[in-house]
Amino acid sequence: MESRYCDAKNVFIDSVDVGDYIALDSSDNAYQQLRHSLDKPLKMILLYGSPGTGKSILLNYLYQNSKYQKDIHYFETPTTNEREFFRKIFKVITKKDLPPDTQVNFSTLVDYCREIRGKREIIILLDEAQMYTPDMMERIRLLSDTRSVKFVVTLHKTDKEDLIAKEHFQSRIWEVIQLHNGSRKDIQSFTHKKLLNKNLFEIANTIRSKHIDLIHKLTKGNYRETNKLLFTVFEIYEYYDKNDPSKISHENFSNKIIEMAAIKLGYIHV
Ligand SMILES: Nc1ncnc2c1ncn2[C@@H]1O[C@H](COP(=O)(O)OP(=O)(O)OP(=O)(O)O)[C@@H](O)[C@H]1O
Ligand SMILES: [Mg+2]
Image (tube, rainbow, N blue to C red; front, side):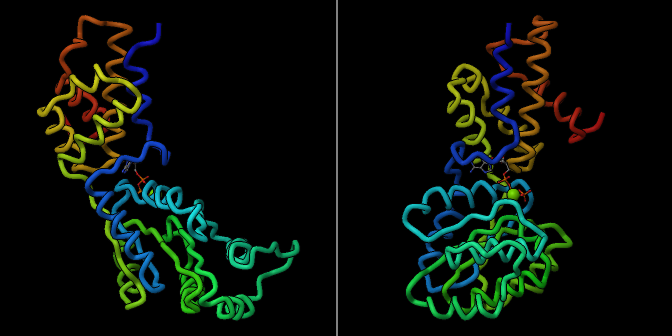
């Protein structure tokens, strides 16, 4: 028989599925700012934050909520192949396919954008901008200078990329929206709502304040780390449920098992 903990474990697989979006304080704030920025005169918008703070899911959510009202396009996987990238951009802007094996004439594309200025407002969402070369970023900027195309760009923040951010994104054309790790309250909503969305009420109810305190402390509020930790917690539960059920209680969630998961993941050492 399948353990009841298997479903709970699968809730915390790290994936970006916009149907699972939760309006957490941290993400909702950034979302409102994003919507507001998109309504302002054209500018480049940078969505910035550490890995696992929810940039990709937020960008997806924005796309899903705007795709029927706006001329908006989502570029998920960054292509470092400049030619391919600009062929895709060309298609979105001109609504035409380039013949195979031809290259985009960039200055013609820029002219085209100038011509449609005021007639169309194209929004392009680019995830993982740290993958684009400085040259590509410069061309992206040139396109946005035509005021016909607005880019929303996500960039993950590491020490090295802080530098990139300083060099490229500090100018006036950029509006910066930052995503942060979740507060304790965010981690509580995240944990409970994810379980409740999959109808796992009983398990959700056993996770109480002291457990959330520990989860938040161990993950520092990072959503990806919270996924990893809870996935591992339920993996351990599943194991005991199948092999040694006397070790666990269905009624009381256990900080001890959270600690075991944290040790397994190397968050704490013994
Ligand atoms: N508001 C939210 N609602 C539901 N799940 C979320 C939310 N924010 C983050 N997550 C989940 O947390 C995990 C990390 O989010 P995501 O992949 O969007 O982070 P990221 O900032 O894009 O990270 P990276 O910089 O590594 O690309 C994903 O599994 C995502 O589904
Ligand atoms: Mg991402």
